[in-house]
Length: 164
Length: 429
Image (cartoon, rainbow over all chains, first blue to last red; front, side, top):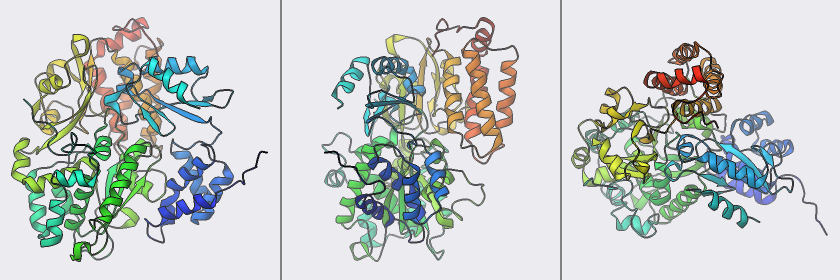
């Protein structure tokens, strides 16, 4: 039987946020908003709902709008549902010189989607990102939390086939 | 034979170089332990730092010792130390490897800096995408705390130093130090007006010093081998080795930590020479914000702050982006312009509007829709972006725009007239 998970931040997420809060002065709870949003997003299948952002705001005792500001400013937050795996491919200069175009073509071909789209089976979301800071091993992509470097179309095929 | 990996990458060839035991086997934490045992006078360390001529490795090249002297250790109240590990300047990936392979050296450097400036609380701000470095750094913090190298009343010395890791969430602008402080306070990464500078009004409004990861990681070696050694490894006014991230059309792209003042041609040789033996066309010598230089200039230049500045570019973060004769410079500029327009924080109109404008003009040239007068327009927009904004992101786009048009005007004109590239037959993205 499917169990409906309770919406909102879990006790474990709150405990994790508490660990971050220990790092900042007691009157600077707002400092934990970036890590807290990462935690909330991870727990919610990779994206943030308005309710979750509100809850992060309430937990940190800061206005909801202060959370929205951060969630919309930083590129790692998703405000719409994403696939089980998020593929972020770099196309900035060093990757471009190492033919990231070929990698992008390969990814779009294999997945049958464009940037900022999710495959119909909900497995993959494809994103174009700015420099990932691994330029000497270009071309590079980030799949969920793992860097894949010195990419070739064959390597991309292999990486995709390994993902559940 | 160029000497390599003597400072920040000194543990690189050792097994599990990120561990405390490895770092200590390489001589790590000796300086910090000595300070805790002997209470080395702060002024003595500060003088050694100044003498070493270490210049900020994040991009600006500001003398680190001088920066430290701006924070008075006797000022009452909380002061902060922050490490900028928000590495994001396109072409740059040196700090990632320091954090992955030698995190303890960053910790030791920060601890020493904290001692000199009388700071007891510090943060290392690491970009959010760096999952592996984040994990390694956090593990290193745990080891250092357990060994009594971080915390309160360390080794019974009465010295306190606590260091925390903070993470980002994807924003190039947070590499700008005041935007980084805003971000650390839990806000959008909007750079602050300066003055006041962080040394008087920094994190939470308190006096703060921000240094780059590589700068901090250089400190323990400067103090253990001595400032004279460090200075002599480089050239006058450009102390020490520096990590160069060589990417692009070379056979062996990589991070090479070599003495400042090394000729570019030697660095190119270290990086395996040009890919497929093709001729060198141009190099962006210090990260995407640095003006591009032509092959002839590069083959006769030494890699140091002063030589590159004299040639009209900058050493910046040490990201050396190498391009061969097949590279379409219109295409390269279009990609860079897209980047800056994506990453402009939107606070200042000249940058927010100007970067988008530049990106659209270069984009239309690249797609065969350039118009006569576009180059003058680009030059004009770039000129109006320079020096008119709170931070230097606008300049970081304006400088490449002007240098690309100056160095490769014929390529841009050809593209506008013929709707295709002079170089690669009009291949589009």
